Each structure stands twice: as structure tokens, then as C-alpha cells.
Image 1: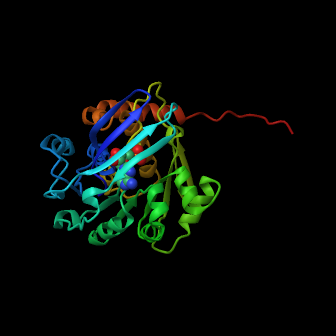
Image 2 (image 1 turned 90 degrees about the horizontal axis):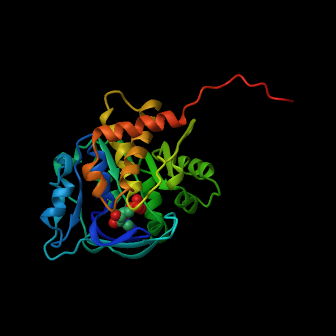
Image 3 (image 1 turned 135 degrees about the vertical axis):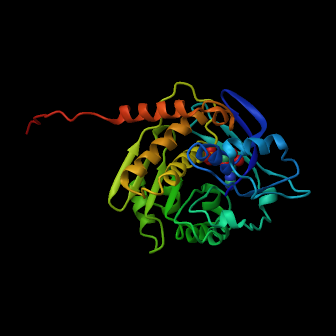
Amino acid sequence: MGSIAFDAVRTPFGSRDRMLGGAASHFALAASMLHPVRIVGPVGDDFGEAEMAVLRTRNTNVDDVEQVPGGKTFFWAGVYGDDLNTRETLETALNVFEHFEPKLSPESQSADTLFLANIQPSLQLEVRRQCRAARFVAMDSMNLWIDIARDELVQMIGEVDCLMLNDEELRQLTGKPTLLAAAREVLSWGPAGPSMIVGKQGEHGSALITADDYFSIPAFPLERVVDPTGAGDVFAGGFMGLIASQRERGLDGDVLRNAMAYGTALASFNVEQFGTEALQSATPEAVAERVGALWRMGRFERLDVDLIR
Ligand code: AMP
């Protein structure tokens, strides 16, 4: 569950006035490469069959996408700086999300793995409460909600297993100066709170922090990035999709590390084209190839080195 949107995006490499976007849309396109997905959220009358067909990529179930008569789809506009690391939000119009009262189908309510993509924390909380059967729940958020709905956000974080947030948003949320200190702070929030934190660091990759482990993976190196929009959501889709696909095995350290690798590989495709374009056509072979390359990049044999005193 999360935003399903129209995005207007300008980057140094071009612009789009209105394309399918939204955190849940990006997430579903990625997660569906690893596990069946049900996407939840409202859209307006302006959301056409062509957009719905993209949501249905790889058989994603859209029964819980509610088309609101007379409503307008969530709209977001943003512009990127020259190095693509800085982004300014020009407009956020919640539209149909403003009065959305989710009533999930029984099938969605019985989901085992739940991702609460970026949207108002009050909505995330409502959906969390409807999915009583969920055994693994993760969430994302962003600076806007830290600014305007902090109390609800903190309450929401107290009810998930995994918090995924941009590095700087984790610092903003906790007031702690380093990623590790910020993650440790959130890990201390309440008995039912998160047992793992994923800090997303854009082109520098991401880190997974638990009470007794730290794992870090670089972003897949690319010479040409066209549009970073949605990379975090696609990362989350790969991460959650891998975990959902391994439910019989359980949640051990290797499953989590593979989840980080699949999230990273999928995100690298997303940023090579505008919006959801690249993920509609990504092939399993190409994804597996990038996961293999990431594995080779991080691995080294330890030499027996004599350090001088
Ligand atoms: P990301 O680049 O991972 O931050 O995700 C970008 C996507 O999030 C875009 O497709 C937007 O439609 C969507 N988005 C932007 N702002 C918000 C917001 N405040 N709440 C929910 N979704 C948002």
C-alpha cells in the first residue's frame, strides 16, 4: 500500500509532464519479479486503462486499487539538481488519498508480508491494523511526513519489523548525527518496534542494521543515470519480494543480504529510464546478472598482511 501517482519530473537529461509514478507503483513493478503482489491504494477518474495495465505487470493483482468517481489521482512534481543527488519537491497533491478509507479485501488482509510504502502515516497505520496475519511488515516514509505528521509516524514505526528510510531522513527523524546512531535509536523504540533498519544512501548504496549485525552494499555502478525517482521504492520491492519468496526458509542473515542485493540490482534498472519504463521490461536474466556482479564487487580474499607496529 502506498501512493499510486502521476509524476512530473525534470532531470538534467529530460523531463516528463505526467507519467505513472507513486511509491506503491514502483514497489509493485519490482516485487512482482520475485513474488505475487497485491497493490492497494486509490486512483481517480483520470487514471486510465493504460496505467492500470502497467500496474498489472507480471500479474500484480489490482483488486484493491479503488477508482474514486470524480476523484483525481495523487500528483507529485519534482526537479533534480545537476548531480542528481539533490531533489526539490515542487508540488504534492494528495487528491484521492486525502479522504481515502482503506477497506482491504480478505485476500489482502491475509497477506503474510506487508509493505507500507510512502504515504500519510495514519493510512499506513490503518492498513497495518487490517492486515492482522502479516508476519513481516516493513515501511518507508519521507521528510514531508517527518515535518507534518511526526507523532503518527513515530507511532507507526513502533508497529513494524523493518524501517526503511533515506540516510538523511533517519538523521532528521532522530536528531542523531550518524546513520548508525540514528538506527540504534530507532531500534530502541518499544518492544513491538523495528528489529531492523535499512538506511538508503542513494548512489552510495544502502546499509542494514540490526541489534547485532551491520551489512552494507554499494549501489550498482552506472555511468548514466536518467531519473532517480522511485529508486527507493524499487529497492524496497526487491527487498520485500526476496523475503516473501523465501518465507519457507525464514529470515536468516543470508536471506536479508540477498534481499539487499536484489533491491540494489532492481533499483539500478529503474534509474536508467524515466518513471516505471525500465522495470516494465527488465528481464530475470539481466537482474540475476547484476546480482552476480554485485556479489563479485564486494568480495575479496583476505591476505596475510604483517602490520608494522
Ligand atoms: P522516491 O524517489 O523513492 O522518493 O519515490 C518517488 C515517488 O514517490 C514518486 O513516484 C512520487 O509519486 C511518490 N511521492 C512523492 N512524494 C510523496 C509523498 N509525500 N507521499 C507518498 N508518495 C510520494
